[in-house]
Amino acid sequence: MPEFRRILLDGAAVEVRRDGDELVAGDGRRIKAGQARHLPPVVPSKVVAVHLNHRSRIEEFGVEAPATPTYFHKPVSALNAHDGAVVRPEGCKWLNYEGEVAIVIGRTTRNVSPAEAAGHIAGYTIGNDFGLHDFRDTDAGSMLRVKGSDTLCPLGPGLVTDWDFPHKRLRTYVNGTLAQDGSTDEMRWDMHYLVADIARTITLLPGDVLLSGTPAGSRPVEPGDVVEVEVEGLGRLASRVVSGPTPVRRDVGAQPTESEEVRSTALGGDWEFRGIRPPRR
Image (cartoon, rainbow, N blue to C red; front, side, top):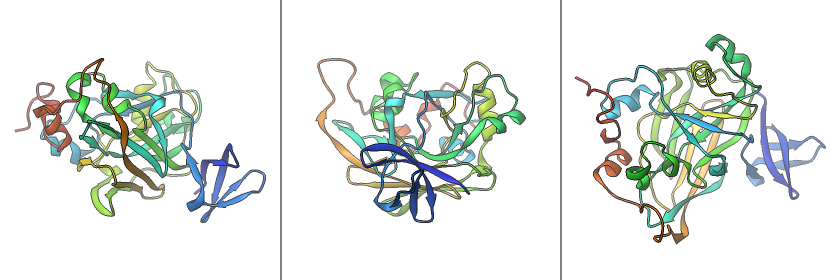
């Protein structure tokens, strides 16, 4: 399957094509993939993420499956790349990984049907929808700091343009140990549905990214941990968790908290969805 990446090559951002274990630039220059300094494979104007989509995640929270999808926004300033460092600010402790398939838009998309959406998708990559749950008490509605803080949106390693999403495994590893094990077959809404749903009211532009949801097993990680998300046919996205050198400023804004809501959500409890949907019986 064709795969394209963006790397920093001799000081310039260059699009390259993967050829086995090498990356090939348009001018013929070659570099080993393991030696390249990766950039996010696309340059989106926006990153949109769906909340609950995988059946195992819904069951983990112990709630009724939602009737329709709901979304949140990750600012593009949160973008990160394969082998990049994900920063957990000093004073925070509830940083969770969420391995996901990322949909990449190929052409301007507005008011399309699910059947038409396939023709508007350029391809797919891997995303890790990291969340800094220390700010959930204050940003639960918008998820802005929870999901939008700097470095919390790794994408990569490449954009695969001829990938069919059914029957694909999605696995997340922490320090080599399996932490999430899901499949695209457990998604309540498939890739085409998500694109069509968002594009009803929001124009999607080439390069825009939709994160399609995570399976059960999202848990906190610590500085020094290596998190890898592997999707069948898309490769393996690696991230290194590091500690921020300075604490979150204390002279402005809400401070990190460790409430029941924060702990429950970070550890796979149901607090996040209490009062939103009736409990499962």
